[in-house]
Length: 630
Ligand code: ADP
Ligand code: MG
Image 1 (cartoon, rainbow, N blue to C red):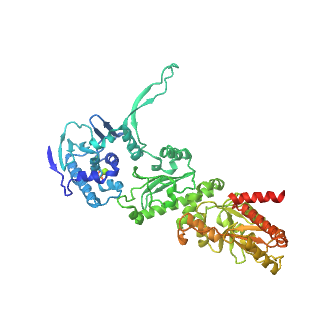
Image 2 (tube, rainbow, N blue to C red):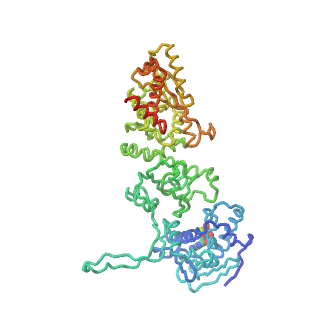
Image 3 (cartoon, helix red, strand yellow):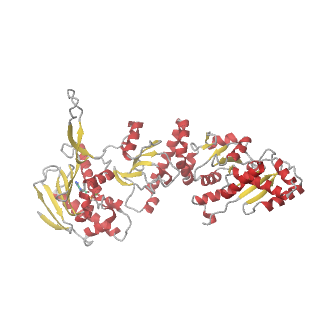
């Protein structure tokens, strides 16, 4: 037996480990199981290359709770360690890793739990929950088993062990009084499912009862036979580690269910990521049905490193617009021992992020090409991701030209190119600009949509919350186009063409009318605008200038803060069609009272068709209408 003192330059490292990692004690189990997995995989490798003359067999890792003795055991059948190796890997190397880690981070109170394993603090994280740790280990080499024991002070003992007969390592944690939660079976099961659900070596935690098929000659009332079997908590071969060619649709959807057991809706489609140069990355991303609430969707992608769960915060690794997706990413190449802001500047991570973006774009393109009808059917459920991506990632914007769709109010779906081709004859204005009309709500803008359709114009239905931002971007990226909402001007001015309709009113009459209208109509609400239009067009129309409305919307959904926090006022124009019969009638009505009544009635009708008449004003309108017809 030998005794020794771990070479300490950081005083009392164990209390420090405990204190520093306070928020995330639970990761000790992940670290110990990772070590057990590494040891097993190393043995597999050595056996494969003939270096270790052992039967590899079907090794597993076992986790056992001994609540009475307050102990937790993690047992593997891996390469094990000789006494010299314990000396070297546990007392020297692992410890100096722990020391280095603390040196570097002891003044930093941030959440650095994800970095522990990557500093070689893995093994020593056991001291976050245990006040004594033992290692019983027997190497695959012909050497006696070793027994290491350390009680949390820098002193340890290392002696030969007669007890340990089988190859492999057993770690015994004497759980500290303030960590007894880790003696609860339910708590351990929870941790195993969180961190080790997809680790590559089977992990046993207790046993379970399995029902066997009844033998042929069994009687009806005989109970089915049962047997006790190992309870394996992980799936060592998760779908993302396989080749896409070996997987069918049903494998992808059952893996989705494995990832999200509480999720009942099927994903719309998946993207299998698989690259090994210039970095290593595998994974499967799923497009779920999207809601328009952008924040609700986040933090569903899980990040793994060699099948060990690391985090479900993939910010910085996956471009923001794709954090709305679900699934798994596994990469040993993502540096986890750095802060998030550093991560975003890291070259490898940038490449990973742009690879993912490109893969997603390619997949969308092929889905669109292979089955357009199906893609159109899914458009409303995925558009928020695509539109958000177009807005925030220029590369994605370019690629999306192939599959981004622009649906019309009549449910026709066009790509931008198809749309331009279709409308270029009828919707090019006198300055040679292509004017694309859209509505944001079919019900509320019904009358405006109808008058545009009467002119043979196509009207898109664009109703995402970020639409004004996206249009702004489209207008800046594409030449000579502008988007105009159907209610932003009267129909003859939405698309300005050469011809001007001649007014039926003389200049003098127009002047009189204008004066009268500005007296009656509240100027703080409406700007009156007289226009000579088609006599069939409505007499009064309320419009909301595109620019102001868009700025207001952009301000509400973030960005475009050029008008400060005050919020922009509502700005409406009242367009009066001087060629309409009713307008002539107003002009020719003798008594002022009657005239006012006509104007108010027409104004209210215009407000009604823009959904602006509410409350008291609506009541007044209804009363006035009854008076007029009785
Ligand atoms: P890391 O895993 O990053 O190397 P750890 O502190 O987790 O750092 O472990 C230190 C070293 O101790 C390992 O590299 C390995 O050599 C040895 N070790 C730890 N656990 C085991 C085990 N279960 N079987 C064999 N060797 C182990
Ligand atoms: Mg480790």
